[in-house]
Amino acid sequence: MKCFWPDLHGVSCGKKPGFKKLEKREQVMKKWRMIVLIGCLFVVPSLAQAQVDKLFERFFEREESRIRPEDLRVLQLEISPDPVRQGQRVVFRVTISNGSRNSGRVTLVLKDKDEIISEVRDAPLRPGDNQVNFPESSYRFSRSDHCFTVEADIQRTRSPIDASREFCAKRTNLGWTLSDKGIGPLYVEELEMYPDPAAPGQEIRFRIRLRNDGRPIRGHVRIQDRDQLVAQVENVSIPRGYTEFQIPHSRYIFQRFDTCFTVLVDFERTPYRVDALREFCAKPTGWTLRPQIGK
Image (tube, rainbow, N blue to C red; front, side, top):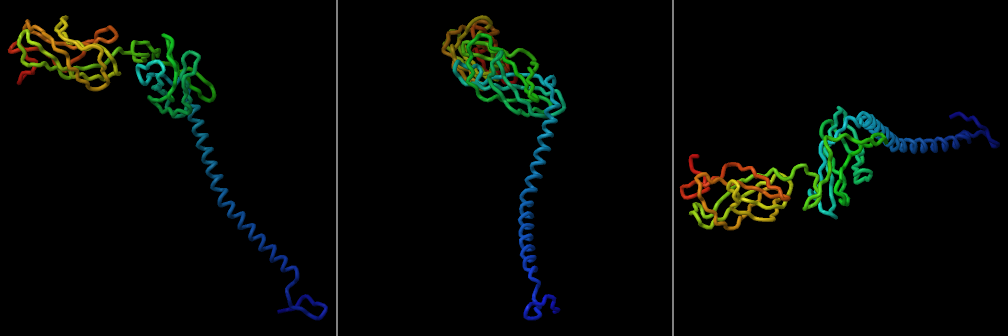
């Protein structure tokens, strides 16, 4: 090894004094490089995720801007329960048609005149029909003319949505309803008579099996022979689905050879004839309602 730096006592072959400082600097720089590298490993993925999130946000913003208020139409507005009584909490469900070919998120506002009842933020709307449930509300029905509208808030601009018809709640004896039908559809699944066969003048009773495909109602259930009342049960609940009713005894007198029974439901003082799966006619051979074999 050659000697480059003589000292006072002779020649020294040690390292230049500044080398130690350079080595320390290099060690410190290496440490800083490692710290920066480790920091980049944590920061870069976060920045990348943020960029991806921004891309998604821009994508949805573009999608939202493509849905215009004139592309939307309210097809149906329902409440649950229906009918709803004073003081009950209620849920509104709206069916909206999106006539555009684009999906997006839209804020929907349900109103009664100028009063906001409920609101759904960023409701996803696809092309075609969409059902959206509004949050449960404590809205109070008080007037006799509650008519509802739906507005869409698109890009901070609120516009009313066209509707297929007026959606007004009607007051009934059971509460307020949005149903456009009085009742039903109702069907007579079975009508049986006891005893069967029956003799003229004998006390008989009936069993009716009803199917209600509509909303729950309360009313009177009658059995008639043409315009003649045979038997009835009053003020009974007819829930959705299947229900059986035992009709009290009646001293109905069989006289004609074409005694055919029909079932009616009297709802809010309006009689509705109930459709039947078959005719229920009493045959004169012992006056029976049992279907004859082979017919």
